[in-house]
Image: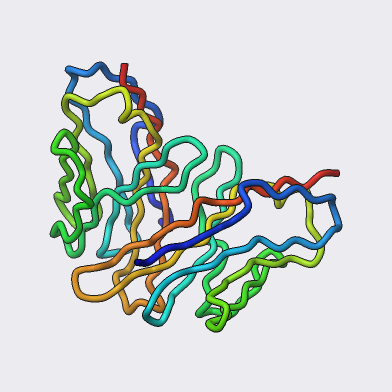
Length: 111
Length: 115
């Protein structure tokens, strides 16, 4: 079955420290993975997608098919990075077109 | 216009009321979605419309009735809801392109409280 696992409910780091938000997936096909972020009282918004191999707000994520992981990383955390982060797997094909979200990780960056 | 909009922002209704949630996008997207999000939980897919036709219903109770009048508009009609239906209801849209380029964009949500 398709599944996305984010093992940490809460990740607390100090400003300037490196950040790694873990995401593992279970999917037999070729995965399409996304990171979404939800800042307090704001809409859920796309942070990055693996196909673009881009860096947004200093965050990067590399798809590791061997470890079935798509961890989100940032070398130096900022206070404004505090938010809920969701990893999501996109299922597409036939009549299917949906995102399966992980349970989310709340990132708290302390001053 | 590059946003998904939703109205109302907040809605309080009784269990016997009938109400509707509205979602609108003018990005030319051909897929639209309804999600339910409980506090501190991820969004859960409810319905997907593709080219104005219902393509996915995730076994949602019939007290929730979606409608897609045109490619820009998506409604969710509510009737005889239960208190446990209280949640943030999110709308999203996407271009409905090939998998590796189809990205969903979310609205701000409607916070629903059922008394």
